[in-house]
Structure formats: structure tokens, C-alpha cells
Length: 152
Image: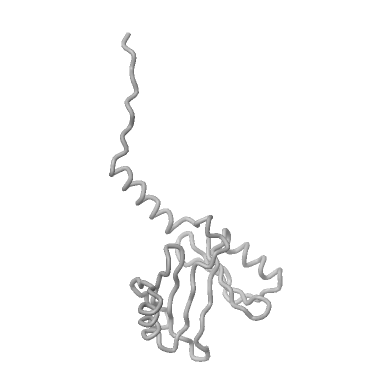
């Protein structure tokens, strides 16, 4: 009886490419556990979003993605300052002063929101699904600081 020998499996470029693309698609839809607790989204409310965008690109080196329309009009200008973080620039609301706020990546948005309320925060935006696998919420922490949560 002839003995079968195992041939070593060659790693090909197609396998590496396939592996990279599956990681990239997973990253955009599955929470990134290593980033829990990190600020992964910063929102800038600007009286002149176009000027703010140009300044951030030139001075800070941020890259911009295609803008998305906002429900109340205007554009939400998406930017990235790293592979793990970015945000958006939007027009200020009529009674709002220009400024910034941030969103923290969490394992469970609803649980984080409820814990924040139990610990003295005020609800601003309840947990709201914005796309499959992503829910956001916003609280005003003690001292008046606005903090967003984002995760499943």
C-alpha cells in the first residue's frame, strides 16, 4: 500500500488579498474590541464648515471622505485622522456656539447609556441605531460635558 504524503500548502497572493479584504469588511461592521473606551469619532460644529474643512486638511493633514446629506439640510463632512479615528464637520444649529464633541467606542451602547444615567448623567440622545451593528447615544455627564457612545 502506497503511503500518502502531505504536501505543504503554499500561501499565495490571492489568499493574502482575500484575508485582507475580509478583515477590512469585518472592521467596518463588527466592533473593534481593542478600541473600547477610545475616542473614535469627533464632531465639529462650525459656523463655516467649508472653511473648517479646508483648514483641517491643510493644517492638520486630515483626509476627507465624501460628505453625506444631513436631514435638516447641509452636509456632514466626514474626515479621518487615523485608521482608528475620525469624525465629521457639520453646520452649527441656530442657538449653538461652534465647538466640538466626541464619541467613545463601547461594547454595548445601551448598557453604557444606562450606566451613565445611573451614575448621574443626563440623557441627551437615547440609544439610536444608525446602521446595522452600530447604535449611538449621547449623555451630558456631571459638569455639563457632552459624551457620545457608539457600538452595537
